[in-house]
Length: 364
Image (cartoon, rainbow, N blue to C red; front, side):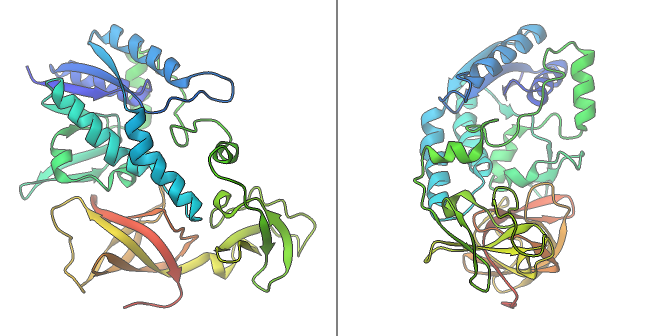
């Protein structure tokens, strides 16, 4: 009997994944990953509560289960990069790194040591064999598809991975959990980054990064407020600016960060032209296949997502060395350095890159 090691978070998705695999006759082993050691604002270790849910589910479906601590690996491989990017005024996506470095590297290795033929998770994605390679496909639930967060994986990792809920909707997953009496059937989905959880993000970050206050200014240089540090703001942000009683009454938005002068540049109006660009430069491209889908210097038509849950955007991509130059058919809002742009060809996730800058000038 083939052994499958399931990464279980204590949530409904991974719990149903384990249940479905057990039903299919696999030798299923559940493993809970602890990636962070800190308690939340209420002094509660949320990992302990999640571990209890894993225990309850595994006991109910009658599979063995273990807990493994990857806190050191997470801190060294993910959190250090997260802090470094924020110190540079960028906005990283640690979930992407966590999948590459922890779930599909450290955990995958652990699963193999437990005798697993493959590992499984509760991600809403699918895989398929095409031309001798394993490709990553969008999940069937467009509102929950998580391929955006897995674009840094390689086909060799995907070949040893299973995603049992990828062909289901979230509603169907919860219904399966209810029908089978899983105690997590109604559990709220986790939000945000795992090491922050439900805590105030700004307060959390202040525990690691010093405040460096400066001016908030308009494009014309008028001072309209003060910021606590460029690290604490992201492009397109509206909330938390505390600019009241100024201007024409419309909301203020972050449109740029002047790192040299420590100035946060703001403008009024959701439709500010400084928030929208068609031309994007991205670095550090990574491809799920062994090679890039486009030749050096070739213009390639596909679609892209510049943020999670964004509808696919039609783009033309030009590859030059270790950079991608992307022209979107429609202007894109708040392209943010440090975030990921993920590329697709129909239902196939090709890979992606890190957004660096946006402009009004084509590099083609």
